[in-house]
Image 1: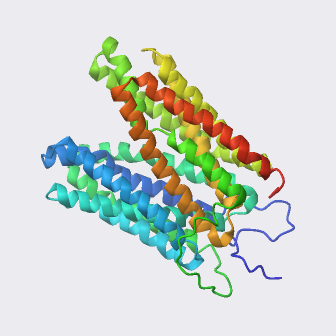
Image 2: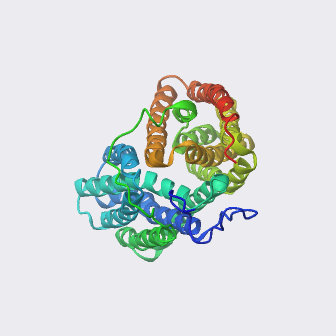
Image 3: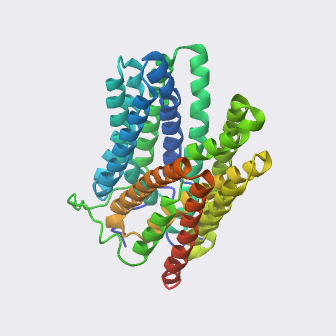
Length: 420
């Protein structure tokens, strides 16, 4: 019998085999696209402050405005990209277009002669980046068996995090050889290679035999129905406590400055942030593998483990003094937390969302993540400034405790519907 759903790529064996492989050509292509895309847009991101404030002579407030507007456009793009990605044919065009536009617009920042042009290009690049996210995540579910969602999304997160580490390092090397503007222009190369990689991944997926036209509609209520709705509510609480890493760096710098001076304190804080990124990279795939092995409730258990490590991290940030070892533990546990949580959130949505709403589900998840991050950083930043750092981190720790309660509430129905 012919399966009317989308088939996985050609390396997937027929049903009845002992185990379907998860590392297919499609998964490898999407992982490569995530790595190359992150390398590409992290180069202009790392050099944006220098371009805006030093080369163009604009104040730091201009940089903040550009980044704030760009993040808002990225969030809007993720929300609108969800309904667009519900259609299997449309999600392919959206992914290719999103990767290509992000690469081209980001690299053109190197030609900008004024801050307004920088803002327009950055905003356009980030809107395209947001639009492609639901399409990429839905495509990944197309090219892997349901029993391996955790490993597939763990692999993609690992490659994404590796790109976030490699991008700034490459930016340093390019600036040493060329200029800031030239380095930003050269970022188009890995960005376009990412588009090539996503095209390769798409070609591994057979389209449905009969094309079913799906209208573009924003579907929120159907996505929030039942088990997935409960999980989204718990994810929202978690994201409201998911601080931007810049506040972790600030906390470490403030604590270490009295004993070490501002320059040394900054260097130590950046080294600790590197450890955070390494921890997130190292744990993403093992977290996904564990999610698969634990069965239906695996994604929820792994998210809960990530939330619990965040709770430990934030408590340490709230109570610790200028002790480098304790700060290192706080950064590393936060890295472990984000590696577990992001991987398992995606695996849970892939497992529970109906295929025809998969794009909308990933779009809603991405919107929840973006909006929650804005709220977390805004509220915690205000508390950090007008009250105290300890109160700010106590607030986000309380969010993590609430998220754990929400996950416990959401997990129970999952036991009745084993997907393995």
